[in-house]
Image (cartoon, rainbow, N blue to C red; front, side, top):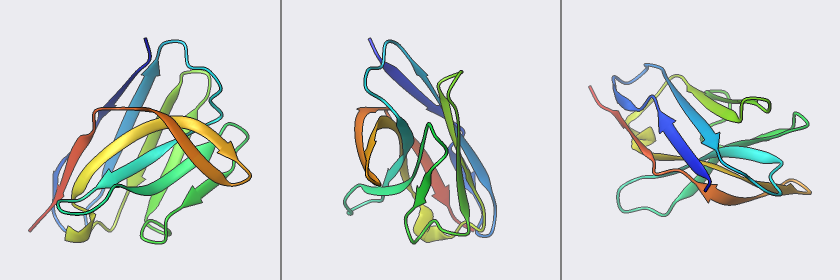
Amino acid sequence: QVQLVESGGGLVQPGGSLRLSCVISGAIIGVNAMGWYRQAPGKERELVAFGTTDGYTHYADAAKGRFTVSGNNAKNTVALQMSSLTPEDTAVYYCNAGSDVRGTYYPVYWGQGTQVTVTG
């Protein structure tokens, strides 16, 4: 059974930083990418960033320059370092794993999500 467990969410002030971590366990198949989605209240779930096992990374426009995705293939972990946070970053953040096909990410496995709240 595949499990993705996130940690590191919480409450942070605007302009602050937060690091999310995710550990993936179980027999994952056909995975060459890991990343993060988020879902804000009343909005659709959206891609934040993903990285592939060969080092390619992709960021949503809202994340560029502020967030960094990093992974450890050997440990099956993925992290999201977030800085310069704004209230618009408030959301539930989901770790996921899947496949990258020509630059498009198809997540297959999902975590339960971790809440990030940015408020002053």
